[in-house]
Length: 123
Image (cartoon, rainbow, N blue to C red; front, side, top):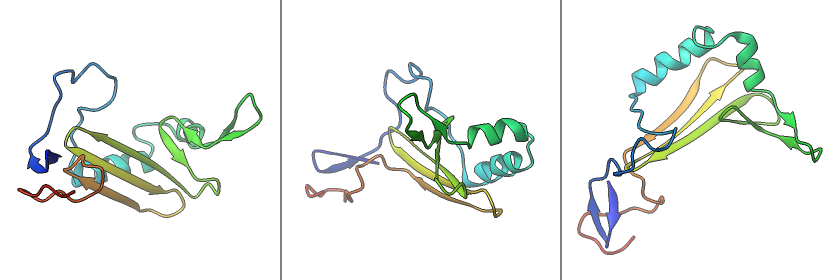
């Protein structure tokens, strides 16, 4: 649901959907659990490739970058994260690299974080 003119409305796709390289992928919590397990077992990406994706690198300016192949990297190397969103959706995943758990937030709203109540003009 998105808010428009103070009213909740369904939102899913733009007419330019598919123009960009990201988005338009739907996954449930069980889908994400299978995906995460496959990553942990190196069934999708080799261990060496995944380690490279999760490794900070140095920019030409000399500053460290903590962004690796779509993942936000923590300086301590303990976890990686990724956010996403599209019309009608927002999500966040945090993967613990030392333990065996992920924290996943899935939302069916692309509102800016403020609540939109149906029929309300206040956001």
